[in-house]
Length: 126
Image 1 (cartoon, one colour):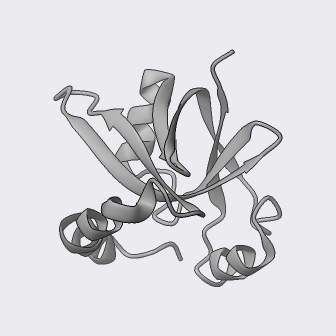
Image 2 (cartoon, one colour):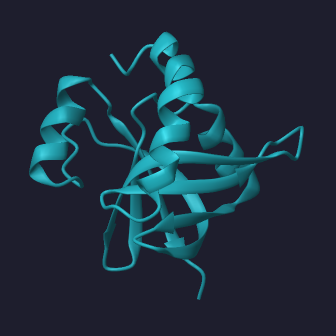
């Protein structure tokens, strides 16, 4: 049971604009900067992001079918604003891990409780 679409709609219009003000500087948050597949419009999506040995993993709390996920996978890359800097990431791939073993302990418990079994993984350019 990933988060319901109604929560996603609410977050898109209310929570995300507020979260976007701090997400690019306060861990474990980040902002995925991407373009719409059809519109070409620029989007900024707040996310939970974790980096380990140069590999970035983003919790897919709305599942693998979220529009922003489709956008970055189709584009083959995206920018991530995190910890006050911008990182260009390539080769995003959606992976499944029901245990959320890739996430820190507290986050792992939350992801398990909402059955968020997918995450997006990407690496930096170069």
